[in-house]
Length: 231
Image (tube, rainbow, N blue to C red):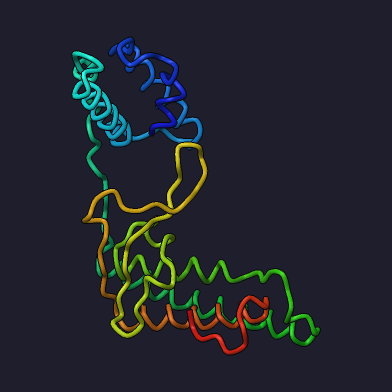
């Protein structure tokens, strides 16, 4: 957010910033974000930007840099009501059945490809291995069904978040897209974002299965010593 603000009003003295100037800046930011994302920016995002600006100028008032907060005259964007629809039990069961079928098919296809690589004598000392991402995405869907975690939280998981004995996942970070369009890992904004989620035995087993395969592949890429255990 700060980078966005600096781009538009970073060269303006704080006492010279007006409500109209902020209105124009927010309009420009909405347009830029929408063009970059390929879809309109939600009013919730704009509401957060407004809140951040209000806190900044409130601190400026506290520091006696300005007499009044210009954000008091800037209209607060309404927070969009979430339009969410949860899966029914039947829908979840159908999705899980299809997921199981696709997962087994993906593993079989991958193992067949690896067997061909071994037969050709090129299964080791490679610089890359194709095909594992499809299995990873299927696992991500499974975790989503089991936990209800957000997409960014699932993609932000690392092996340290998984406890194979307690069957839990610790949520402490997420994969997000920043204002400059780059992706990266960030921490939750509030304490409630940090949590530990219990998962069912079948999901835990699939996570362990994927981990074991990943270790084997890392051996082939010479990224792990031969006696390294599961991640």
